[in-house]
Amino acid sequence: MTARRGKGRQAILLCKVFGIASVQAEFMLTAARSFLATRWRRGMIRDRASLKRYQIRQLAALQRHLDAHIPFYSGVRRRPFEQWPILSKTEMVERFAEMNVAGIDASAIRHALAGGAERVGGFVVGQSTGTSGNRGYYLISEAERFVWLGVILAKALPDALLRRHRVALALPGLSSLYRSATHGSRIALGFFDLARGIDEWADDLVRFDPDTIVAPPKVLRWLAEHRMLNAETIFSGAEVLDPLDRAVIETATGRIVREIYMATEGLFGVSCPKGVLHLAEDVVFFEWERAGADSRLVSPIVTDFTRRSQALVRYRMNDLLDLSETDCSCGSPYQPLRAIEGRLDDVFQLVDSRGLVRMVTPDVMRNAVVDAHPAIQDYRIEQTSPSSLRVCLEVAAPAEADDLVRSRLELRFAGMGLGPDIEIVRGIEPCFDRKLRRVRRLA
Image (cartoon, rainbow, N blue to C red; front, top):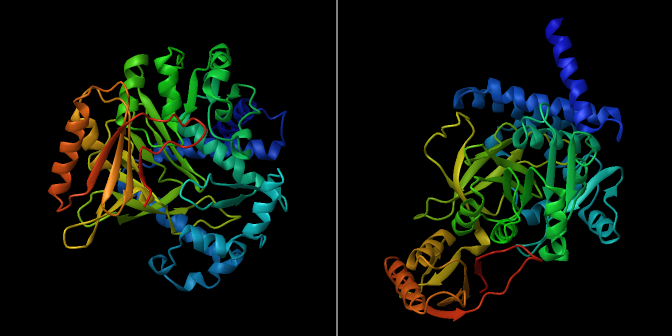
């Protein structure tokens, strides 16, 4: 009875944290339970063995739901998980109506969003930015929106019960997911629109005085360089956190830059206080595909345990991850990452002397350019044809950087049997109105 009363008091307090007076009580209780469950899992799942047992139970529950409620997976209970289909973004969009409980087609979501609506048939809907060339779509229930809220708050702000927070979001678009967090009486949230340009709202950010900020690394770097980044907790999100940007931000602020790994498809990871990004393996099951025979990078295939309105099962992501092989000193059993390196779309496909196509991952070229000269603070690397690439350096970089970058790349490529033409140009266009991709395959 005492334990039950304790949990009840915690739930009531969490409702106050999330602002129960602003929205329906049942959804606030959903967020509160999700917060408590996430914190409970962190305490109960202490090693990889207990995590695996937990995931097996979650997959079994998901399997029963899919078989009963998602047409695409009718009869799935008769097949082992390893035989369920692996889906691409294109396949997901094409079969979208079969993959949600309401039979809503992707075109209906597309039309609704084009008209400014964020709901279809009582469900919250959204879309990706289309960075990789085609958009992905999602559909969730109101309850699932608050499950998401509870999970991300528990992972990013686990002390929400003990102290008030002022959180600044500088992200490309405020979706309904983010707006679900704006109701809290103990969490004040400010949104700063990247489309307006940083200089338009930077002073407002300083006046808001956040203790926590979530923003793309290019934004965090700009704020740090202008001495306007004063938040106690700094989260990078929405883009790859380049080591160059991390170094500038951490040197300027004296604080560790943490990461939130999230996409249209869901929340995939949050950094611990040590600054190490851990996958959210308590809500998502990860499988891996290697980026290439000679690469240690992998791409995830994800299955979300929490999604019931729309299935996200064995979905092939486009991201390139570098998994850490050592445990984190924070003690978390969840898989740590060395880095998010980019996207499969940005893997260069260069032709060697025999006419064969060789794959070169972004980290190979990034390391060659950054290591060429310590004064290099920014760059762009673009594949312009099957046998050529262009490197853009800052105008302020030393003159000798051109030859050093070229020689470093040539040496790296030669070791792979490649000899592409390398063009070095000066001048980098700022891109605060879109996602920054320092390494891009254009051809």
